[in-house]
Image 1 (cartoon, rainbow, N blue to C red):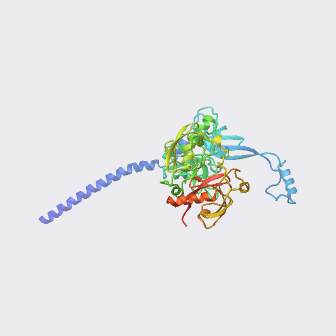
Image 2: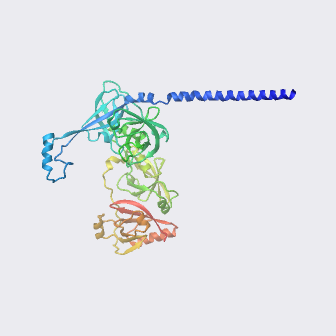
Image 3: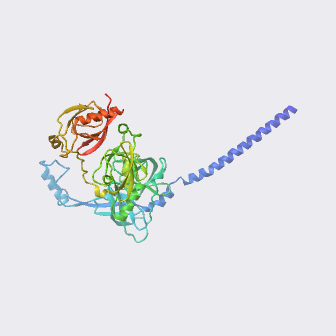
Length: 491
């Protein structure tokens, strides 16, 4: 009987142990269920939508356009049926030349209780009348305070009898890929609509100089333009601007201009009625791996200066061939980052710009101008000293070259005093052709030294080879626009 008693006692001990484990598991499960249950109760976006909807508006614009002068689009011009259709239009539509009113739809959102409204510039561009429709059905006419086509942002103002519900901007730099977002607007003229998705990507560039788009898969369609993209706290992190679509409808690739760009633009439009961006006064290009090797740089980063016309940079002593590695204490990774940083800097501010020049670091103090005043100016082409014309033609680096003559300058439409080598032909199997050099291009520098003859170029090639360089950096001008190209020296 004793062995049996021992067996029963052991069985009893194991049973109690299992019960304790079961209690622990149930306790843990209960603890987990509590927050999960709370999360399930909060999973609906309805409370957020109810909170932010009153600040989102529909925008209707009206524009007077010229009437038709003939039956365009119905019959070809000169067709024997043209007179017949013109008479038909006149009978049904009256005077075919009569101006008519065209309407367009978009979205926007209120950013202050006193009636400032943000939307896209393309929504209200050219409009004669702008009507704002609020969530509660009320309507007010709006006036344009200012616009910025570069970022496609417009600031409007309405006059209301009392304070308006509004939303605030968030720091878009804090938005992470994978964060939930909500888009609101007036898609396809259907009225107030909400869609949800996530941040799909950050720092997207489409075509503008100051682009900083948040990509999202939240449904954005025509009519959503100018509407807000919200985070889960009900703050605006972007302005819905564009979609990528083969058919005009949403395929889950939408773009919202980041709020950190928008807020700077809005502040300037509110204060000045226009933007006032800093201007450095240089032409630049990215530093590629082959360009970095040709210049002896440690890494392919920074912005390579290709030209320095009259302006702030030239006054500070900057030169073509300098590589800007730091601006106002911020590292410069590429041309895009430099343009955005300069544009966001105050006009008239003096900043420190660190450049690499012939392997040596230099710090320049530049007092920034205003970009808007400088836009449209044609940079001056630097002319070299007078030298004898060299009619020799020679093939080098896959290029057939000859020194510029008066006849060639006239033919190419260049500055009468420009010196350099004209590209007469490019070997289509060469690296030069692959990198975009074409007949008619003009080489003004090689190895960051001016070249005015074939002999000058040969000396630059020889010097680069003696220095152990694998490539030679050329400054190439096409229709006055300069860019640097690195060509391999290997046979």
